[in-house]
Image (cartoon, rainbow, N blue to C red):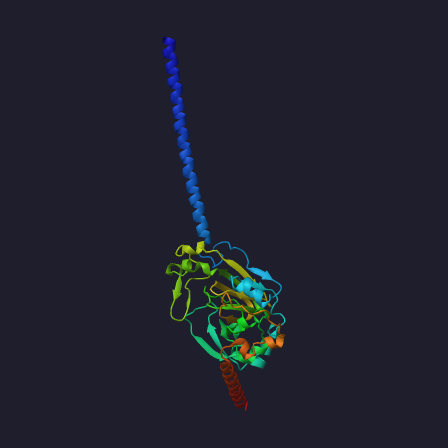
Length: 353
């Protein structure tokens, strides 16, 4: 009986010690979990802090670069592979054969210095800023030391120096051409985040450009006030600091996947309608882009072949190649430019006398 009592006491002692160790172990486990949770929260907070107030496009990892190719596709391939699905692509070296590829400031001033252009003050784009009209020559004489850039309808007198790419030299594209715009600066420009309601090919004749681009499928997600989206009767864009994105105030930007694109001198890039993009330029920068209305899904019905045209016939100076719907407007613009050139030349001669 005493033996049984002793065994019971020993068993109780062992059980008690085991229970105590078990409780102690549970306490250690709970503490370990708490430490892990705290560490995880600290890592997350550090990660959030690391992405806060970075330049737009540096706040998260990109999906990679847009497609690049060394050849320009045929009009039908371009339509089927890029414009219809809305796929950005860079055509490496596609502008190197154009006369504009050899532009120097001296050549532009001497040949086109009297052309009227629009200049925006502030290389960091401000859509509320006013534009100033002046001559190309006046701008080029000071742009290397001023905080401004030229964004202007491409002067008609300069259109012999630029060509349409062969991929858009077919009736379905030519009939929908809208505008040609020139972008000149000494570099370090910084655009707002925006998109365009037309398709666009941008050709770069000097400097380099970096694009952050994301698909129009994000429209419902990004076009909200909490994402900085702004719209009025004239324009729509995002009011956010592209040099220091506030991801705490606008965390939705962490959910937007984007591509990058790096354009070098002589490259051309297709930017699909609706694609959002933000652009930075580097070095002396000269680019011209051509916009056209998006082609419908049946645009090439009945179009069997587009005859390749030589460079001369692809030049933008052919009015019906850059504004097919209104050739009379081309003629008027040519007359106005000629009159302005003559008046400014006369004024310069009078001043010299």
